[in-house]
Length: 424
Ligand code: GLU
View 1 (spheres, rainbow, N blue to C red):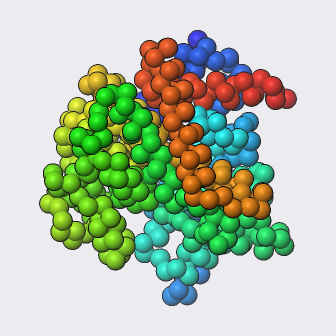
View 2 (cartoon, rainbow, N blue to C red; view 1 turned 90 degrees about the vertical axis):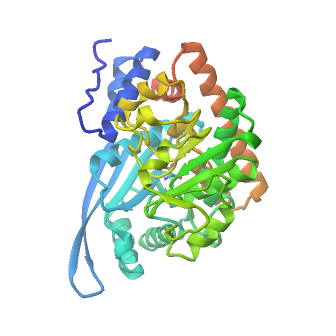
């Protein structure tokens, strides 16, 4: 169809272009009409703010903050806020769109958004981060809201920042509004199971895919890149289900032990070691990037975008890739991975367990009620498994990858919702 631009992919991978490339393929397969294609290809709103903060030494530093609302066709927009020194508008735009697709794939009534502040939280004091978080929340107070746009943790943020955001938003409005963010501490209306939720969804996706590939978890090896919230919980839960975790990694490097790494021990080590694996002696240390090329059954990239690229795609030696991070595979690498016969459970499906439990948190906040951990886990496992099966069936029916099938499932739902709501 002529109105679908063939999304140029330049030399340097760019997450927004990677996202658009897959979106265009799925749109074409679906025969998406021009109106909705144009509506979805650009975000609804992009807000950029400058936030001056008094640092501990008395100097004033100005930080750049972003919030991109990609779409609210399916409901209030939802998506995390990341604190990272490399955050930029193109990245946030891609991440916001991925949230739209992700929420639609798992069928929760949210649109997509993402936020970020360009900063290095590792070099900032807790007081500086608190002032920055409160100032960002105030600057975005017209954008956020429990029925409007609901942030959550992402890279560099967690329960602590969500508590400050909830508090700041509530002060601003003069009432406690717990449903304005998710991923809060339990005592402030957080949900049981939220911390492990993304990693748990990765595990459910991996096991469901392994069943299709006839890989017995008890005879399987698993490699996990990234040992933050997503990677560490995915590793722990995969280990619990019988898989041998032969390598893990973080910014300090990669750690390999063919006999299997005791993940609980590694998590304990990290929590006593400034949050990093540096010096972990239960495994051999190798270069961080090499972890992706190890021979394994399951590879879980759970660190960041664009780690599987043209440079290393042909060296990947796994049967299954389960994308714990958002956008870990650059669009250009898709074909190489597919030609090698590797199954990829795409990010918008594999890591949707986090936003699914965020939705449960929001529901609990609205009910003023708390669910048990069992209820949360049971419901999110069910959603993850049935979403996988829906995507799998579409991929078989249209003879496309799971990634394109996941985009098709999402875009089709949003297009249907849009056709009822309409535009101006
Ligand atoms: N940041 C997470 C993600 O990328 C969670 C988003 C949310 O819970 O709203 O999926």
